[in-house]
Image (cartoon, rainbow, N blue to C red; front, side):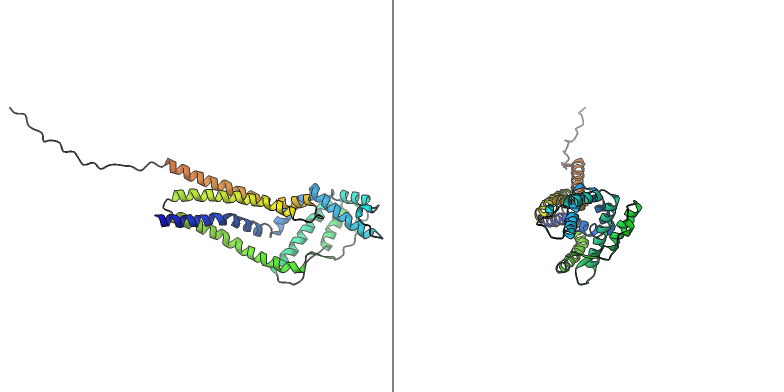
Length: 300
């Protein structure tokens, strides 16, 4: 009985450890690599104040450096900065900005997927012409003066340097393989561990508690990853905007972690209650029949 319990405990422990890892890889593969789902996740951020402020600051710096005949020490030293920033901030509140935001995210995601699935050398680049065309069409529909004169030029912008593409591609292939094998291994280990257990009800209770613990650890990992990610960002990155992007991308993962916690606790509680309702084993003692003294007939 002891070897069976030890084997069952080992298998169930491995299954519970693999469950949060399998959830993480499945989320990364089927959520981050699906362009429509990614675009739908990022689209609401166009109305986020932190995102609009970060875009306004980036565009303002680029426009000021382009228009200034002599580069200033900082963009705030240029007298054009307040006017340009007000104009850019006004643009970020228009439907045209939301169109540009969605088109840019879709173009970047498509370029990354092409780089991950092919072995084409070189950096990951996007062509801004389709984005510019969509913005021009939106501004023209809004009757913006001279919007139809906006030139649509093919401009290649690098989003991932060439030196990082190979490592990114290897990591993606490993993640894709893990997203298939880790969930399968977790299910097989959990079923096998429960089957070989001497008391399957207790094994099912332990599996539920382990799954709940894995879900809680995954939720903690997402929170810790958020703090570490924002702490490692360079100073030029707008941290509130980065936090908004991180929260949007990991919303599904956080939901999955809480579902694991709830599912594990439900299974453990149901298994425990089922065990309490079972009738106790009958302890019928086989007692030897007592011999009755032979009946004597009354004497006449």
